[in-house]
Length: 90
Figure 1 (cartoon, helix red, strand yellow):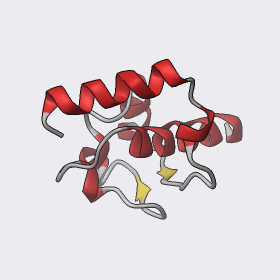
Figure 2 (cartoon, rainbow, N blue to C red):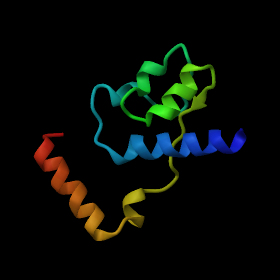
Figure 3 (cartoon, rainbow, N blue to C red):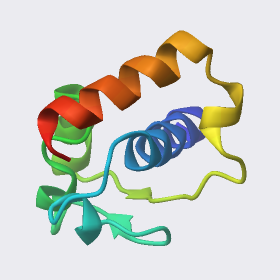
């Protein structure tokens, strides 16, 4: 169970940093605890199985990466991210 929580925290942290901020994403900050009372904050940001897991009563704490993922991404990935940001108007 602890392994699943660690994976979930890492996944949510990555998603929060990998995508440009918007008004919906701004509602989730490092340190927030997401549970069945406020699962709507991460709806659309995480895979459905994870969201269902939280709706059923589990909880996760939003973490913060201690490094910049862009430093470890291949150049083609960074190029794609830049292209996607320019076309979506984010």
